[in-house]
Length: 259
Image 1: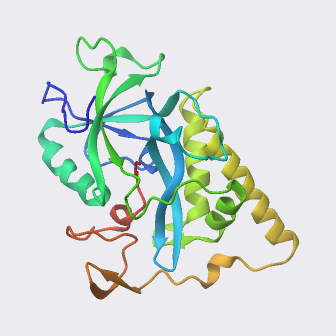
Image 2: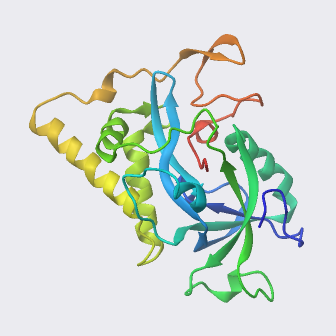
């Protein structure tokens, strides 16, 4: 479905999570369903962390655009697995605002068909549901300043291992995503995420065997001075935008950027 075209049924609001939303859900959901979307590729191509040590989180790239890139991971499954959350009807406006604060930084709202996993309890699906569920997803564009483009997998794994933000270690985000995806379905693992996770574990083993200190120990995530809209200010946030600040670490987190 096209970018700003909402589903016709307004009393159902579903959001698709493919990164940290898998294990850190939005507020006020009453149903969580594993499944997949098509037409996209999941890649680690978005800045997060602190201005001095920006980390990486996953994005969704439209498959047609991904095909034009020189990606070191040159294959990708047709299905991008994640979870769909249904938001309670009386909380839709509140959750949309919450998600906009977390996600809007250069990204646009799209509606995309979500295919529930085959073993999902039919009672969790919309009444008389036939076929996929229309879910909201935030889609970025390559001209977004936080879009980094493809990187060498080893360099990317090294970068992730060294990065840290107010929400924690970038490597923990990566390993958390790997675990969350593996738990959704026997076929929901992601080769890109798995390869980076294995490389990051190898980096950790190397640091340990060589007796090197953890490179993230020296990163101060408490307060940094950054330039926002042409002005200089101190911040505790991991990302900045022209809207009001997030009110918690969870809202500050890298959460679900799509490209």
